[in-house]
Image (tube, rainbow, N blue to C red; front, top):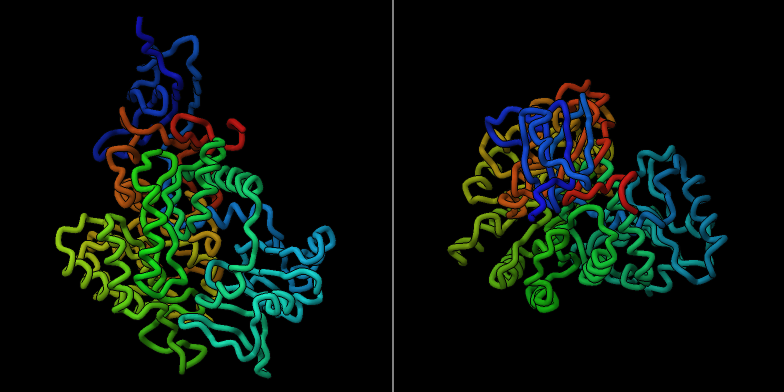
Length: 539
């Protein structure tokens, strides 16, 4: 006799399926990793309860699909889980003391790395430490201080190991920092990062797997069930595969394999050769989404049409020559992969649309969503309309704006910062837009992102309130639109029979929370594939 009972039954005040026009349901049943049934009657699925059914009776609770973070860096979070936690420092002496403490228990000559999710304007001195200051924390270890994905500061030990001197040529698309006297200050930006980073030994595999276990559980605890990790090296992906094999992933992962630092199609072809081994992977927990390019810099080097507010001779940098990027993107799409390209400033957005338009003209019949714009930070009305006309999806990251608004005003001025991530404008044009965090530059969290998009609140107040969107629109950007970006509309995104059982349970309805409460609201339960993966779940 066939067993038709559920493995999991949830009764709640409201189950929001996100099916257009469908009223909230009151009960949801799961069998295996799929949703089995929903009912408007809280007891309408009681006939599915058997001896092995786990029942959650949660009056007052609200159930939503698990969220996607469509642009984040889980690999960085995993590495940072065991790095020096400099994001806790509030002054440079505290920052240096944390490094000093790690140095005291680290064998001489071994690398010391820091977490990456910090901002210098959160330090009392409102600047980055220098190589000389890092030397005072330790001159017996090479030190790599990362801030986000575009900036490093290293001590003189690390500079010597890398052979970087005052005569070292600056790589195209990169910066080697100098102080007021022209001496090396330890700062490396964008395409200069590899000068040092290639020397840093990867943590051993067990340590990295444990880092992913901890970090993916942290994401899930905020309501995120799937991440699109946007800078994954082949070596990183091998660690992901090992973590998946050990059951260490608590979110689904869609990886963008990194072409950052590359400047030619030939280099990209070599990367694509490595990726062939992952082409046919069909694991719903872990897969390769495509390839990640970077066209311009980050906060300090985004390519703008007008000069920077702090330096009228500077307007950011383009990392690729447009003709070379066309060839590189074509190499990817001709092999059947998708492309996501970082374009932050308005000049970068314009240039990327030029590149994508040429690729589309030269490769007719490309599947919708093959070419994606990551960030589109300063995309103006004309650029937004052009992206929509070309069918280019865009990912936006309100938490990045929240955390960095003050830093960015230093470089770009308040008017441009208020125009960043114009969600309202994208939606009103019918753009395929989805949302994420860009951790470690922005703080990840399902409702933290929703709160930011509905309020436009930042660390220095509301910026660009005309770009705010509604709660329902913000949820859609993390669910239905995000699933579409990943090409998984038939698999996830709605709480309907046959879909994967990726869902979150909240002890109140987020739609009706005061904004300050919504900002820090976390679910009581996050299920991915029917498995409870929040801290109270399986270890």
